[in-house]
Length: 209
Image (cartoon, rainbow, N blue to C red):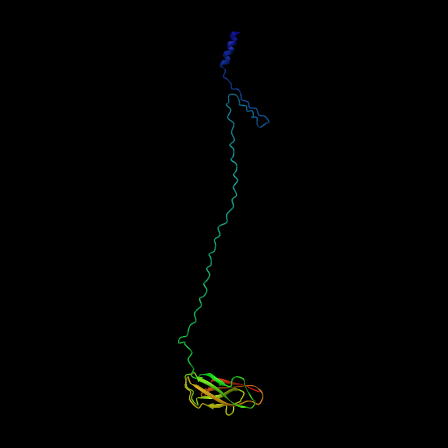
């Protein structure tokens, strides 16, 4: 018996040791690890570890900026037109004194003086020569111009003397008032005989009662 036991012991000692298979239990619960069986004599490879896939990056939505609007340049207003100064004609100056001109200084009768009907009276005008030429007989005459013909005699009278520039002249015309009552006016004047131009006029205005 002892010999057999020793033989058995020796036999068992000469056999190579076998690695017990590893058993991993897998249960229905995901928390329990699964059973894995490795064949005898093979070393179990470590279970492949799944490399976690990086989470997909959701692109951040960025608002597309509108391009900067270029401002239009400020419009500079056109300056207002400068008024052109009036051009003074060459040689312009004071108005020259006319050759024939007069100024009424005094007269009789006063305007609308009352007279009886069909009555004679004198109409008198005192005038001043303010022209550059003398009033000479035959060159300047006293003549009826318009209005009621109340004069006695002719409608034209010649001057009896020369009147130099700056001098006074008394003009007298004989007249007769109308027969009917009312207001009447008659105009006489100094006329240049050569041209027939009246350069000075004066009026007699009366009232007949």
